[in-house]
Image (cartoon, rainbow, N blue to C red; front, side, top):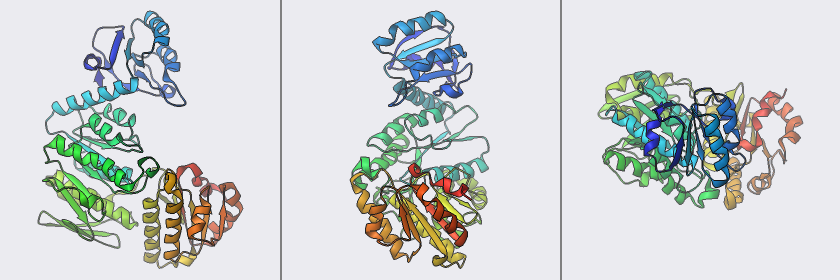
Length: 463
């Protein structure tokens, strides 16, 4: 909950109409689910303009409206102020900048109200949401009701402020997921959220179309580390996977903890579905029967290490909670009977990790890879690197000894440059439907992964 008093201190605010008394404001940017008593923020984008819905929400009982002021709107805004005198109408340079400033002020005040409160940032090329869900599970198990985490993947310049506005006096911990696809975005999100602790999951080629190189991606993601150092006087807990060659380059500080299976300060060992590591002269053993994937067990180890370093008094509770963690149904990677489906996102690093993990699970099940089928779709946002990166994944499939493959999408020819003779290839998923019916009934396990644009999750419902 925020108050209108905060608006008085924002440099982006030009003019206010309506009541001068202080109001408690509940922020909503979506007119489709707007409720009476809320504050509507009229954002605009390439394909929408929230100003078109201001009159609608005013009639629905809005308590306040924040909108971008431009000369062509002056007359209409004055009419709104006259017709709805009990509604606070705020004209600002930019409605988005306004709520970002408002969120920054709000989270700063929230932190000052209770000195032990903590703000945790999570970013990375892959696995941000998984790490966030794991972290929420562990911290909330020890401190129930005191932890707030980003809902879904509201991790951008709009989602982060909306997450912050959900903080209230019952919360002592905020877990803020931070995504990006253009330079400068992580720095902006850090200025809004002011993280004092954090994790970078990994550095991969996601969004390389806009970042030009993986080195630039590393520099962008490491902005979170720099922000944590600044906000915590270099003592904030920050945990990274040292097996990632880029993350291993981060400069050591008092709060930096590097874990990994190969070379790291905290060495972890994963056997089947068991995790072992030593931290601060204590042995930890986590057995989780719900996570068959090696990479997710490694993710869980990293999150457990982070939680223990941040709250050592709850170490035993975290160890127990980690063993009970189950992946929520997030419409992302999931097992549906004998089909592994990840139709939400795909980039070269996540594709390789998923393929290798799937193969490892088949070995544990004593299932031959020849009894499995792989449906591989486009990886988007690779720009000029698309050809080489699709070819690289195809060559990885060959190197793994995978024989049963179908490529789908506009980049299927790039895949075929690295894997010349797949079982089949299609430009559109609809063309694949007849063959799919046979495949899913004739193979023991099926692997399906592609970027969201292909919507390959529809395959599961085809009988």
